[in-house]
Image (cartoon, rainbow, N blue to C red):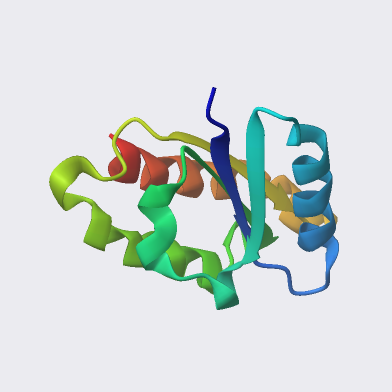
Length: 121
Protein backbone atom coordinates (compact mmCIF):
# COMPACT_ATOMS: atom_id res chain seq x y z
CA UNK A 1 0.00 0.00 0.00
CA UNK A 2 1.46 3.35 -0.99
CA UNK A 3 1.79 6.16 1.49
CA UNK A 4 -0.61 9.11 1.31
CA UNK A 5 1.23 12.40 0.95
CA UNK A 6 0.10 15.30 3.14
CA UNK A 7 1.40 18.85 2.84
CA UNK A 8 1.14 21.16 5.84
CA UNK A 9 1.85 24.60 4.45
CA UNK A 10 2.00 27.54 6.85
CA UNK A 11 3.16 31.08 7.45
CA UNK A 12 4.23 32.06 10.95
CA UNK A 13 5.20 35.59 11.98
CA UNK A 14 5.97 34.86 15.63
CA UNK A 15 6.55 31.10 15.52
CA UNK A 16 3.21 30.08 17.02
CA UNK A 17 1.63 28.93 13.77
CA UNK A 18 4.79 26.96 13.00
CA UNK A 19 4.45 25.19 16.37
CA UNK A 20 0.86 24.25 15.52
CA UNK A 21 1.94 22.97 12.08
CA UNK A 22 4.57 20.74 13.66
CA UNK A 23 2.10 19.45 16.27
CA UNK A 24 -0.39 18.54 13.53
CA UNK A 25 2.37 16.79 11.58
CA UNK A 26 3.42 14.82 14.65
CA UNK A 27 -0.17 13.69 15.24
CA UNK A 28 -0.58 12.65 11.58
CA UNK A 29 2.64 10.67 11.14
CA UNK A 30 2.14 6.98 10.59
CA UNK A 31 3.38 4.30 8.25
CA UNK A 32 0.50 5.09 5.88
CA UNK A 33 0.99 8.88 5.84
CA UNK A 34 3.98 10.85 4.61
CA UNK A 35 3.84 14.39 6.02
CA UNK A 36 5.76 17.39 4.67
CA UNK A 37 5.77 20.62 6.69
CA UNK A 38 6.73 23.66 4.66
CA UNK A 39 6.90 27.43 5.15
CA UNK A 40 5.06 29.41 2.46
CA UNK A 41 8.21 31.42 1.74
CA UNK A 42 10.10 28.29 0.69
CA UNK A 43 7.29 26.45 -1.08
CA UNK A 44 7.39 25.72 -4.81
CA UNK A 45 3.80 26.02 -6.06
CA UNK A 46 4.53 23.62 -8.93
CA UNK A 47 4.70 20.73 -6.44
CA UNK A 48 1.19 21.32 -5.05
CA UNK A 49 -0.53 18.61 -7.18
CA UNK A 50 1.93 16.01 -5.85
CA UNK A 51 0.10 15.87 -2.51
CA UNK A 52 -3.06 13.92 -1.68
CA UNK A 53 -4.03 16.33 1.10
CA UNK A 54 -3.21 19.98 1.74
CA UNK A 55 -3.44 21.72 5.12
CA UNK A 56 -2.97 25.50 5.23
CA UNK A 57 -2.06 27.44 8.36
CA UNK A 58 -1.95 31.15 9.00
CA UNK A 59 -2.05 33.59 11.86
CA UNK A 60 -5.21 35.69 11.96
CA UNK A 61 -4.42 39.27 10.99
CA UNK A 62 -7.31 41.73 11.12
CA UNK A 63 -9.78 38.84 10.74
CA UNK A 64 -8.00 37.51 7.65
CA UNK A 65 -5.20 35.20 6.58
CA UNK A 66 -1.64 36.49 6.28
CA UNK A 67 -0.77 37.80 2.81
CA UNK A 68 1.87 35.06 2.47
CA UNK A 69 -0.84 32.38 2.66
CA UNK A 70 -3.21 34.34 0.41
CA UNK A 71 -0.38 34.56 -2.14
CA UNK A 72 -0.05 30.76 -2.20
CA UNK A 73 -3.81 30.41 -2.65
CA UNK A 74 -3.73 32.94 -5.50
CA UNK A 75 -0.75 31.25 -7.17
CA UNK A 76 -2.47 27.86 -7.03
CA UNK A 77 -4.68 29.01 -9.92
CA UNK A 78 -2.07 27.60 -12.32
CA UNK A 79 -3.29 24.14 -11.27
CA UNK A 80 -7.03 24.75 -11.81
CA UNK A 81 -6.90 23.71 -15.46
CA UNK A 82 -6.81 19.97 -15.97
CA UNK A 83 -8.34 19.41 -12.53
CA UNK A 84 -4.90 18.91 -10.94
CA UNK A 85 -6.33 19.77 -7.50
CA UNK A 86 -9.70 18.08 -7.91
CA UNK A 87 -10.53 15.64 -5.13
CA UNK A 88 -7.74 16.74 -2.79
CA UNK A 89 -8.56 16.63 0.90
CA UNK A 90 -8.01 20.06 2.42
CA UNK A 91 -7.78 21.42 5.94
CA UNK A 92 -7.07 24.72 7.63
CA UNK A 93 -5.83 26.06 10.95
CA UNK A 94 -5.20 29.49 12.35
CA UNK A 95 -3.72 31.14 15.40
CA UNK A 96 -4.36 34.50 17.02
CA UNK A 97 -2.43 36.58 19.50
CA UNK A 98 -5.17 38.90 20.72
CA UNK A 99 -8.79 38.51 21.70
CA UNK A 100 -9.78 40.83 18.85
CA UNK A 101 -8.06 38.58 16.33
CA UNK A 102 -9.43 35.56 18.13
CA UNK A 103 -12.92 36.86 17.46
CA UNK A 104 -11.99 37.12 13.78
CA UNK A 105 -10.98 33.46 13.42
CA UNK A 106 -14.37 32.61 11.92
CA UNK A 107 -13.81 35.19 9.17
CA UNK A 108 -10.35 33.76 8.58
CA UNK A 109 -11.83 30.28 8.27
CA UNK A 110 -14.43 31.51 5.81
CA UNK A 111 -11.71 33.09 3.66
CA UNK A 112 -9.79 29.81 3.64
CA UNK A 113 -12.80 27.67 2.86
CA UNK A 114 -13.98 29.91 0.03
CA UNK A 115 -10.53 29.85 -1.57
CA UNK A 116 -10.05 26.12 -1.10
CA UNK A 117 -13.45 25.30 -2.56
CA UNK A 118 -12.45 27.12 -5.73
CA UNK A 119 -9.16 25.20 -5.82
CA UNK A 120 -10.33 21.64 -5.17
CA UNK A 121 -13.87 21.77 -6.54
